[in-house]
Image 1 (cartoon, helix red, strand yellow):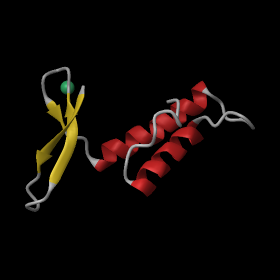
Image 2: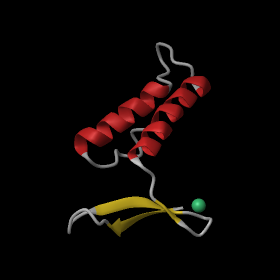
Image 3: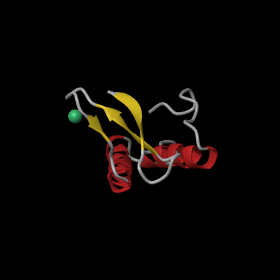
Image 4: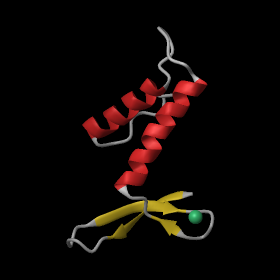
Length: 82
Ligand SMILES: [Zn+2]
């Protein structure tokens, strides 16, 4: 699966972001799809790594996405072992 971009139709600089899937199609998830993925992945991390004083569980993903949104780039992979 590869990350892809496609020219959007709303503006001359509009860009759509998606994935070239192993099924052979390009998929462009909606914001709701992305939000659904985020909170479900956080819940799953809480199940896999129940939060306590030392383990962040879903909070680790929360921090990862927060950093992504604040700096508008992908965080250093070494910082988050996801
Ligand atoms: Zn597919």
